[in-house]
Length: 308
Image (cartoon, rainbow, N blue to C red; front, side, top):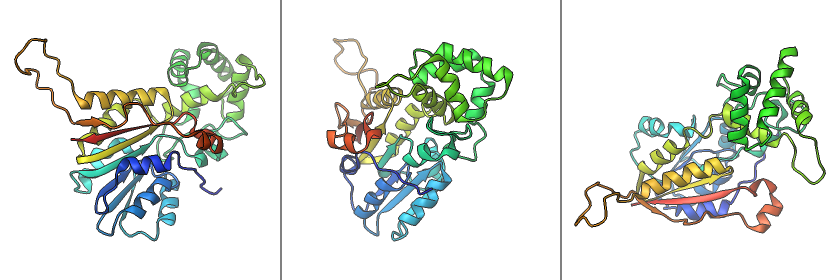
């Protein structure tokens, strides 16, 4: 299957990075290399693009699509490991970082990856195929309480408890191995209704987030990214889920810094120091035209931070 993925808010992300021709830039989630190609087009031969992705197939595709550019380093890793990645490259600071936290259309549409509730495939959902934890493991080994918590917290699914109960009931009979089996179980709890979203959407999202540990490290990743920016450098983050956006927003707010001293003191005693400023007081949203052309962009939010 061809690795197709339409980059969300491409122009807004590239403009937000405020690219310098000789700068060093990190695309922490290369995917189909849509954003990466635009960055590579805007930097000179003296600039550098560091492309990171946890999906080996994405790295292979990016290498092919960016083969005309010589100043690109490809890293098969997780953007959560940015500190180690830059240390290994002996690069102390960079001019810009882009994190697109969405799942690529290729991953969603490729049935063998098990991300989609449409069609049938094995329960996998790993962005990085070298990791051990899969959706099949989560569905068949997590306790009812753990499943309910994950589905509620990461999927914001109000039927999380009955769904978790049904999963546990079914797996007592036989192991749940395919996406079709899981969808069927969810539909025993939530019936399909015309005009409403797919009943399995939230549960699949929740399991995918758990498998790939998408939320827990995110706050620290944002802080690390800001710390590794040069003065005037920009961090652009595209989120597609309220928990992601909240983590990014909190990290941005904490990085701006705020004096916590009691009012009336002649000078600051708490040592509050700002790391920079938030460029986007409110997140940038996709245009109506983009949402109509690419429905998967509808939940996207772009936030931008600039280093002091």
